Length: 474
Image 1 (cartoon, rainbow, N blue to C red):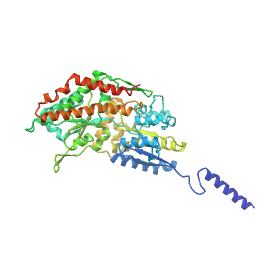
Image 2 (cartoon, one colour):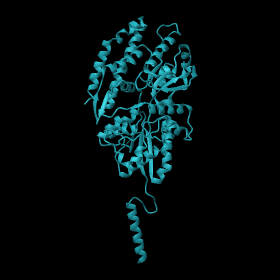
Image 3 (spheres, helix red, strand yellow):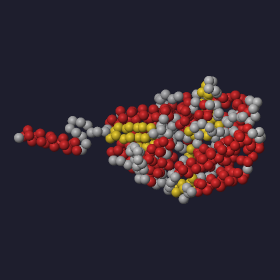
Image 4 (spheres, rainbow, N blue to C red):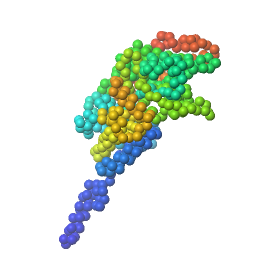
């Protein structure tokens, strides 16, 4: 009878434990969380390595398993996330964590799909993160944390120094001349004339530089000149489209572009470097790994090149404003176990030793004060390529010496940014094509460009763009 009673009690205990999530003789199933990113190449490989490192160490101890996948580009990721959030036919289920910029995070938050992570961090833990990076994740400026920072980037000026040297020696242009927007354009003028003079054909000079993100030039340039174009507070945007500011921005991008001093032709400016149509470009500090090592001068000929990284040019006489960019992580609502598992991974990933490991392979900056320093980089014991060392050191210095800027979130912020970008990009691309047609027909540069360099032409563009952007205000 006692033996029967003991067996019955044992069975009841096993049943009770099983109902609590653990079967007799077996451990509890791990809490599995999924992550969607936009990483590719070296960045994706490094991220996946860190995920596996977490799974085999802290994840194993805490019974957490992380699974990650790349959705492609930033735009591909945004499309997948919003399709899943809206429950579109054929869309996948939302993961537990998504890489997200503030614009997409704001949309998810408005749908009730962004967890406030602030309660999951102590004040001491919060103080370890660079303040501006945490503030970017506070979408409504109310102390919440809807976007967890894991890696950040800014913009730098990348240069094909191999082919720059002959030009510099011939014209006297120096790196210092490239430190301001105005100086960069003066150098670009000289480069166009210098390359034009090397052939018998007239008006075939080359552009010196291009920009990967025209919107960053417009928004950060406006900041340097004292204007916040998209002034968002509590999700409401006030538009400040100051005409003198926009004229300064126009004169230092549209005008040089029309004249052939700067350009854009490939999907990215690093593509233009690769075919020799540009010597330099302003782009993300995280894009260093994509800078080519060769220039293809023909279908059968190429030559090796070295990269130099310089500070992003700022307007003369203005305090430098550096863009703060790089997607953070948004945690999607789930069970408390799932949310806690997400937070555990994000905290682990941003510990200095792990964040630095990601940085030295991806070119992104670490997000904590302890890791975001040149001394931390040099004392990390990690193998750092010369290229990444240059870029990370310069990026960290940029953060230290510049005012950081990122647009606060508001409804349709991405559409507003795109409207601003394409208003200038589409116009200048079409107008430069017209100039080239006129030059081919025998007009002089002065004749071909005259229509586009008048006050009236700028005024018409300004009025049209102001009307388009006003739809996003309020």
